[in-house]
Length: 254
Image (cartoon, rainbow, N blue to C red):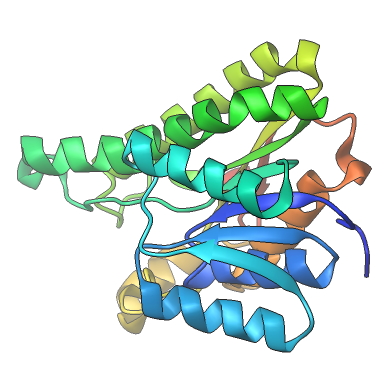
């Protein structure tokens, strides 16, 4: 249970879903977790769970790295708490879901900030400290929507933002290589989270989404994504960079 022993890992959006699963798993594997969330109550509950289980975590809430000063605040907090940074996991996002004819300019701008700026801001703030550490791992959350269109998902903004995250991650890997900073993205498919649970209540929508899942229509769980992130955060992935990992039950394969 020590795949991340002594590593300091920043994880955004730990209050629910995939961020919560990653925070708990990373802490269980020996990481010193630095979390943030926009919800103080949700974040506090996760912190309490991890500490009660014997894990190490400190967190800021409310904190939203969509603002550059909040990303810098989170990095300073990590340095103050643990003296360095080894892993940056950009899990959090903010998105407005709409078909193109209903997507307003304000909704578009909110989505671009919440999908792209939020990643760029934290990577930029952490970059000099990863270099000073002699390298590290950056993990960014993409999406199947960044690679394929989905007929039943009003994702014009989300698809654009996540496609940008995947492309940004490749460039981060190129620029980080000389500094031993690795960068990879994870592209989840349909995962059972607070953001999808209401949609999955529609039998027609769930059937359409599940039809492309190769493992007998099995929907993903947050832990499925967290285990991929754990690998990418660990030294086991020391020769892995510039890659996108499709954790989608095979949905992008056909």
